[in-house]
Amino acid sequence: MDATRQTFLDELYAHGRAYDEKRDDRIERLRNVEPETAELLGVLVRALSATRVLEIGTSNGYSTIWLGDAAEAVGGRVTSIEIDPDRTAQAADNLSQAGVDGFVDLHTADAAEALSGYADGAFDLVFLDAERRDYAAYWPDLVRVLRDRGMLVVDNTLTHAKELVEFSELVYSAEGVTSTLVTVGAGVLLIVKSP
Image 1 (cartoon, helix red, strand yellow):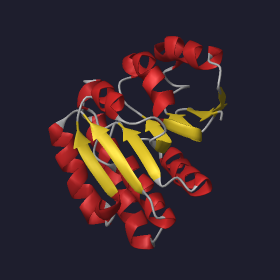
Image 2 (cartoon, helix red, strand yellow):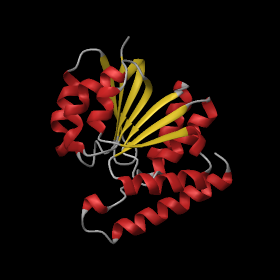
Image 3 (cartoon, one colour):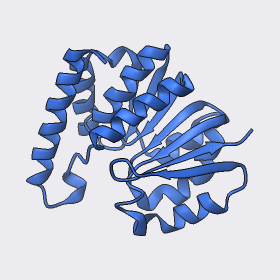
């Protein structure tokens, strides 16, 4: 990552933290991933040469910029879904300032509806960072849209483990996937689809 983009991301993260500290309602917060989680996303995209990336939960685009930077490096594209149109607009502005808007397609949509419309094996990597109560319902489509040996990356799996019990049970009991929990940031669950 070049220094200018990194500086922009550092400032965006600091702004997000300050913004969130002033909000009591969790839904109003930006809830950006931790920098080490964002960095891990960039490494995973590069390691997998993931040219087709899906992000569920854009927020203001902090993690999207990391994904877009990695997509640029491997000649790929990111599709990012956000249900809030104001957040999508905010992300579009931030992506433009960071210079990755040419590698990212932003969509304002309901994640379940969007997921159901994607083809089987449409993505190399999916990053899930949205409303945790919905993850279990997403599970069949999350696996379906991943290519063989594709990776699903799920954030907040340590800090919000109680909210993810049903989802975790689905993952750990599923055939055709391998998973591991990585103690980075808020906890990242890595799930790989078997061929």
